[in-house]
Amino acid sequence: MTDSSVPDISVLLADDHALMRESFRALLDATPGLTPVGEAGNGVEAVRLARQLRPDVVLMDVRMPEMDGIEATRQICSAPETSAVRVLILTTFDLDEYVYAALQAGASGFLVKDSTAAELLGGIRLVAAGEALLAPRVTRRLIDAFTKQIKPLPGTPHGLDTITEREREVLTLIAGGLSNTEIAQHLHLGMGTVKTHIGRLLHKLAARDRAQLVIAAYESGLVTAQGSRS
Image (cartoon, rainbow, N blue to C red; front, side):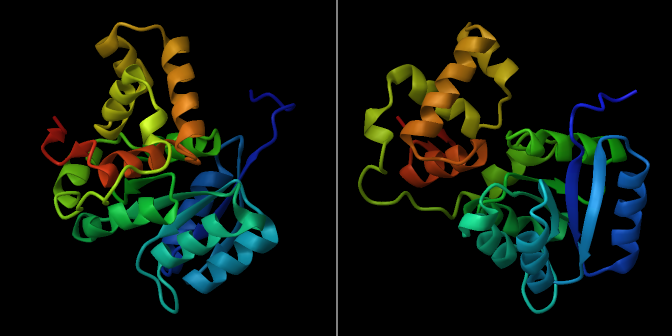
């Protein structure tokens, strides 16, 4: 049984393949606590419905007509009226080059389209809770592969010069795809301490979630595809 006092997570499905949307809807309909509230066949519809429905999560495909999922994500995440909406990108191995762009646009994470039902449902719940889905089975390899082309921005990004050495260590590990549990084990810290460091990083770097911390780490040059900067 689910706790009736906890509101369902509302999900908007954005994919140009009707069969894919129907499959996702059927899965969500059969899952307590998750409610599909709308379907979009292109990016323009996704933005319009996000503004109209204010879902908790948008399950967003990348390649769609009229407006792709990256631009739709950017418009949803940057607009004040939908800034609380979380976007979970769906990608395929031949679209991996879009992963970094999706995170830059404001996405809270991504899943590959051949993920299991359990991975998909878990990812939606994780993102709805304000976390970032950055450690599925292929994330670290993808980040390594597609951040090789990212050149650090000149100067020190806003807030990076205010973080402590311990916060810098935590940020480096976040960018490497480590979970809170793995960070705690690596640095021999308690979970509460790790969460406190992450909260301070979010505040100091003006990041909306964990995904944006990864972007800051790579764009600053603190972390590169080969590892942390010396």
